[in-house]
Image (cartoon, rainbow, N blue to C red; front, side):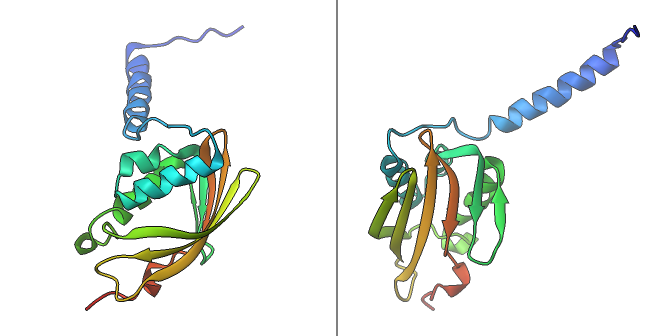
Length: 157
């Protein structure tokens, strides 16, 4: 049997990798599970409307996937966190903060909440309409399918 020798530099390098991973993971807020799929989505929409990144990210599972209308896929809580960092900024910085997403029709099937919504904002020329399917599991969002298309929003000039 071969013996493994750990040197101080090897241990320090391993500790640095471990600590950087822990520090990076801690930049996301703790997850906050909700009692029902409807409560998960109610909290998600409330966080979005409040431009509250921490509250928003508390709803996502670690292995969440976000599917957009153009076929793009964003995988993982960290990547979605980066996406929402921009989305929740003021319009002058490329975001939509100040927008209100208003559910118009909701259909719940098991752990999936399907929502037809309209978005309104003082900086929109007209309301923007779309829909989403939010799949939940164990009180968190695990899959989000959206028709959201920022390029289709008619902004005031």
